[in-house]
Length: 201
Image (cartoon, rainbow, N blue to C red):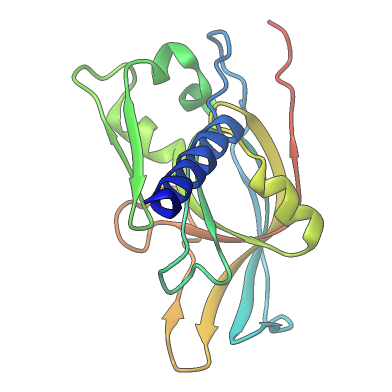
């Protein structure tokens, strides 16, 4: 009985720590990430090996965005290489005055939003936010990614990549911000990531 009690306390304590570590940040209203993501197409580049995975860089990619939500994964096909998804917003999708009217969640590698009354046009919501599968390229990027909290503004640089596994499993990255649904997520090899303090209004 005592063993089960100790295990329960450990699980509860870990859950509480995980929540505290990733507790949301609440900023004042205003656009805190105004620029659209920057992307530069690549020709046939060098393939990158990560254990059982081969990454094919498709474009150089950098952006600053408001973290709308984060979800960590351990058991799906991409988890060994991309343990975290970030739902990110820019433009008016980085403004609390807009986000307070939109419910946002993530599951099964998708990002979902819902609103009773559109604060901005639907197409703007879709074109100014995205779910991104984050692959840390190095230990520093992995550490920074582990500390990202919803509500923060983050800046990162890296590459959009397609992913192949040695058993034939394959996943393509999105190359546009204008798609939605299955295949509409970016797969990002993150070389550098840092929190960005929004400018004071």
